[in-house]
Length: 472
Image 1 (cartoon, rainbow, N blue to C red):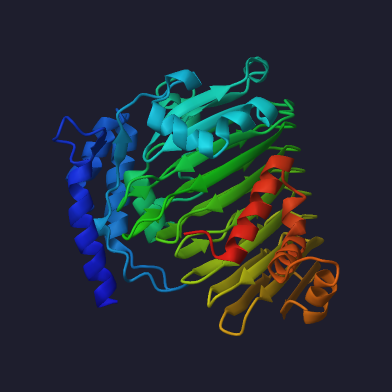
Image 2 (image 1 turned 135 degrees about the vertical axis):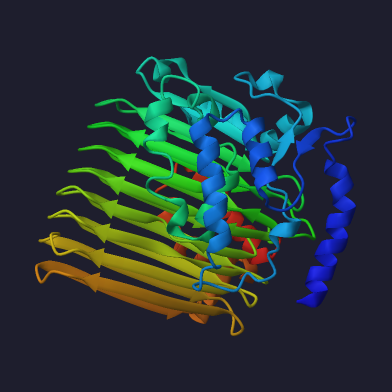
């Protein structure tokens, strides 16, 4: 560990000059590494925050300094906030025209397929580069329905400020855990979505987050409100290049699903393996509402990721479908949580994990059924596939049931690829490598079939690259 810290410090010292905001020849603005009240105030000034947001940031910093590192999940002692830059801004303003995005940034997103996906299958796109959104656009026919899809910071200075103020970090308060407090202090970028009552957004919206600066953190905040009887599919994509220095992602997602509304939130994460992914996602669902999560996690050195749903209203429902792939040097601690508050609520958590080359995959589920949640149903299914004898997979379920009038179940299975299945495919002319990749893709089919076609293809390609050890 000492060697890792030494290497990180050396690389940080080299990279620091690349992002020195005092040098006008550089193409980014950045605050100093570390976390102090002055840095938080500096970020707030850069964002032109209203007074209430500045106060929230500083209060969050106080909470951060009081709280200890969470005692769940893999150790993250080597993550040193003194060497993490919390704000890096490209030298460009957000644009609604793709042609106005700077060439180097545009090239990055074009390689990721963002403009093509927008043309073919999306109602709107937001693209964030480091700490700032550089592109945001929504189709005219969607905007004509009254749908609001914009960057969160702009929305705070318009007619939606009070709506944001009454929802921002209410589902995930800074006191929730240390990294929620960190997020509240230094958050930057992200999206605000509001879908008016009874509006059905037929094609998805998407935000894509790219952390490109070494030794930096990304702290975007996504706030989505789907009003009564409305529906939306929102897709989130994440990626970063690999550096020999720790990067940090501590974003926050808050989702509000109204009465008889429906929200599907899909995530494909391909963080690099120097990333610490300490993300917090939470949804609250009113009477008759439906919350669906679809999650694919294929990167990061260490992950803490447990999307949570609060089934507040009577007859509300939740479904979580996820896949995690832990390769060499990865320790991915993921899962899902659900709290049944209303009567006649139901939840289904269905996850699959894959471990390879010594990767560690841990699944945690937490199901709470409160005493008023009578006639509720909850089911948890976890399947793990280990591709060698040096990898590890653990399942840690927790269930807290406070009423006798509930139906709760949990199942877990763990196994390896069948040699007979590999032999069968090889006998049909398929190489052993491709045969194993096909079997793993089939194992992940429950997630890929829930995604739009191009994203399912991307996920299957990531699985093949992981099988070949080609992802940094």
